[in-house]
Length: 295
Image (tube, rainbow, N blue to C red):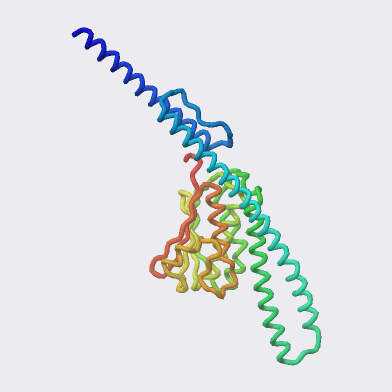
């Protein structure tokens, strides 16, 4: 009887030891997997457990991590090459366009028939539209390639928003829009990049000029949420959900590349903020919110 009890105790002890060893190995795999995902390292996952299945699991995860690292490297290289290509292409487009605009100016000084004058005017309008597209593409390439938007400082969102509105006020009034502003008297302080924050607000205001039916309301709440709203008969709920998609435009003939709000979303997320659009009863609402320093 005692012999049986001793054997049971030994077996139980052995099983308990193996279970603890497996648990320890699982913790080691979990911790090392997290470390390998955060840093670039060629070291493999090493566990202290001698269990064959656990070691096979560690080896399999190590192999998958190496494949993932190779794919990440290819993606990074491809992304860098794409950014460089966009920058070069946009620059190459701008150079001949400048020359075309120059020759058009000279051509307008020449004596032409009435039909020729009309044709030149059409060419000039199309060239200006293409020039605007090239400039927008160039600005986009600069933003995605530059590191200048990564530096942050404590900013008063109220002041940045007011400066952006003032910068667009002339264009807004010229479009027949009388903006209504409601900015909290409470100073909303956030850790942001000044250029990025100004670019976000400017791009949203530019979007309002394209789609507003003649009104624009801008509100900044004490919690730091900024809301831009205007009636927009050209839009619907589905289109509003795609406004932040890269190269999306509501009208196929629109001169915009659809990059403005895409840039705004990219910069907002870069600063751990949130940006979204809603469409209710014929009115478009665009919200921007940045995380409070207290979290």
